[in-house]
Image (tube, rainbow, N blue to C red; front, side, top):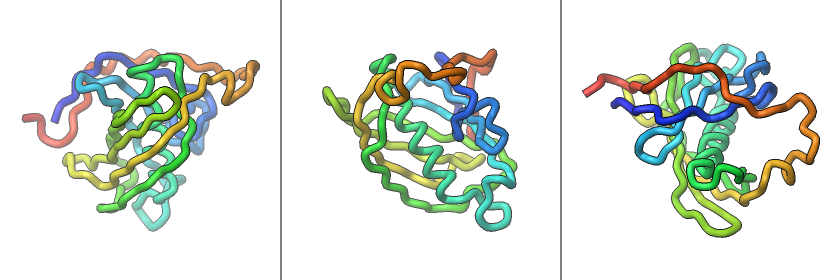
Length: 169
């Protein structure tokens, strides 16, 4: 399956999921795609293991939480989601050392809250983990305070125009 990238999303320096300077983190990259979903691309490393060659379930939970929470930016660019509830179903082991994709979307969007869903896809396109979540909407200044110090949000130089999972049909 091929997803056309419409735009990229910001990253930060120290976030566990997207932080470009967090050597222990996933350093995931996020993109808006044509069907009103967020796609995240990441490669788990040995630092993210539970059992040998398998990503830890808590790391997977953080990845899905971030991805689904970012999906609100497609509808409200200045709103961030604060997690109220996160539910996961682990269906297949998630391997380390392979580029994987996570998807997220908004399912309901109300004035103060939104719900969403997402999944982690294996290299062949098979769903490994699914999640549903509920978030409270907040501006970043209210979550992090007025002074974020050196923790600025920025766009990396990234020229990816598509994300392909499994065999391109």
